Image (cartoon, rainbow, N blue to C red; front, side, top):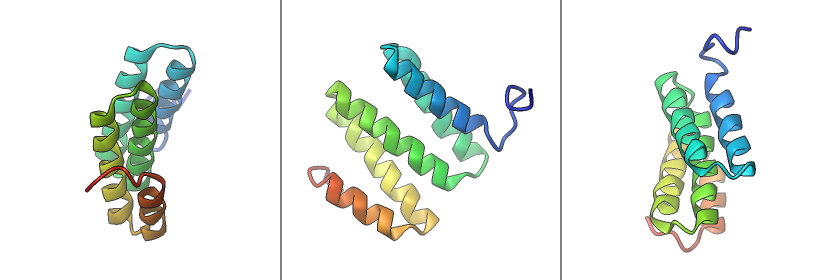
Length: 103
């Protein structure tokens, strides 16, 4: 009930889960829209760490699709968000894991 009513504490999680489910079901347009909605909701409601996660997952999606432009864009947004959140270890992990993405 309360999650469907748009509770700001969970709505971005629902969007992330919806995006991942769309990916599993091969619904690429729905996945893109849901990832973007997750990023927007987490940004709008001040969940910096979840915005970082949403960008990270979106980057992985675009990497799997072979779209390097959007993959790179979202991994950079993820790094920036994790850095703003103060999670330097995660930023370093992303640099190691995504060595081919330039700043």
